[in-house]
Amino acid sequence: MTHAGTTEGLPSFSHGVHPEEHKGATESLPIERMPFVSHYVLPLAQHIGRPSKCIVRPGQHVQRGERIADPNGFVSTALHAPVTGTVEAVELRPHPNGKLAESIVIAIDAFASQEMQEPQKPEGGAGGPNGSSRIDGFVRRVQEAGIVGLGGAAFPSHVKLQVPEGKKVTTVVLNGCECEPYLTCDHRVMLEDADKVVRGMRLIMQQLGAAHGYIGVERNKSDAIETLRAALSQNDSQNDSQKGSIEIIALQVKYPQGAEKMLIDAVLHERVPAGGLPLDLEIVVHNVATASAIADMVENDTPLIERVITVTGDGVRRPANVVVPLGTPIAAVLEHCGGLKPEARQVILGGPMMGVAQKELDVPVVKGTSGILALTQPQRVVGEQPCIRCGRCLDACPMFLNPARLAQLVRNERAEGLLSHHVMSCFECASCSFVCPSHIPLVHLIRVGKAMARKVAVP
Image 1 (tube, rainbow, N blue to C red):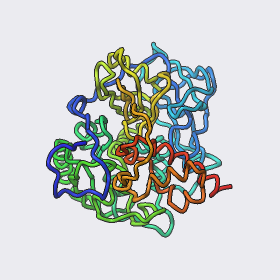
Image 2 (spheres, rainbow, N blue to C red):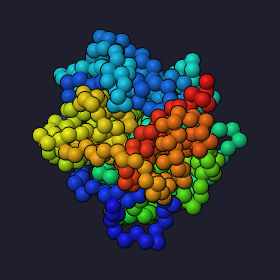
Image 3 (cartoon, rainbow, N blue to C red):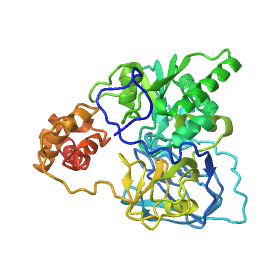
């Protein structure tokens, strides 16, 4: 376990772990563009909340950027065609989460221009009959553009931009930590689109009426810190009338510092209460790539139809940071990067701590896909041993939970005990599993326990 550079004296949060970073293969590689492929698969479920509602039919011709699915309620977003082509099917297809999901399959028109079409204007309330006509106009635009949190969780961004009645926001925090090992896509966005990140931050602050803004970046990305500071200085000099101060904060290198509660603790030295939200402290957190996407929406009327991902690991021939149209099969992305090495044994979407191992390679890139990690040695190759009650999982847990005790309660099927031990406060960062000398699948057991607890809490 290591972390790069000298970070003593820099702010951070309590507990956490220091996995090997493994970012050297891609952190200096500029973002490249993925060529178009023949078919795209767009699951309607690409975000937290209700899946989008399909509005196209098989045989229909669609333009790149055209809306193909509407929001299906407030906590839901629109979905757009990543290419110009023909809807081949609307059917169940494999999803990166391991399940089958209703998906729109588009066959590209190889002879058509892949230029973006003129954006559609939303009609009526967001989400049609299930939406709310009282949503702020800017919030509706973000929802109709299909923008979600691009750090991996894919929470609909517009929800955080609509301040509930009786609440206010004084502070916006952007997450530029990218604390997951191997991943460097956010790092490259901060380097190559720093001005867009700052402009997106300004738009978010303006929408929320926030007077203070902070961008938290771990010290191992010192070039991104300096680039953002230069972009901020230039932006301020060109726009003297802009309200609200923004500060770039260098943070210690620690996992899981990118989690919003940990980031708030590190940057502002405030703790979100158990069961609470950052909004309870008048704070809203977004990802740096999300801010860039919001700026792109406002300035270019661009919906979210592609994203930057990191392709890396010792099992892929050519690591890279790539702009990939949503719906691209991960097999095609790996082929673009030279393909898998013969000794590759595992492919994970996301990072090694919170990513999901895949059983097949025909699943698509979705809005929450931050990386494709190919490994020659699968995670957790050592067999599970009995718990030795060492307490390392307690020292690692950033939420001050007792993972070993939670695992025991799961195995004994004690759902009420799980609730009393705050199992729902776990955000599945896997720090406990990482440090466990007995190789107990703690985070997996806790996921099972959360499902058990939900059945008790909501009969």
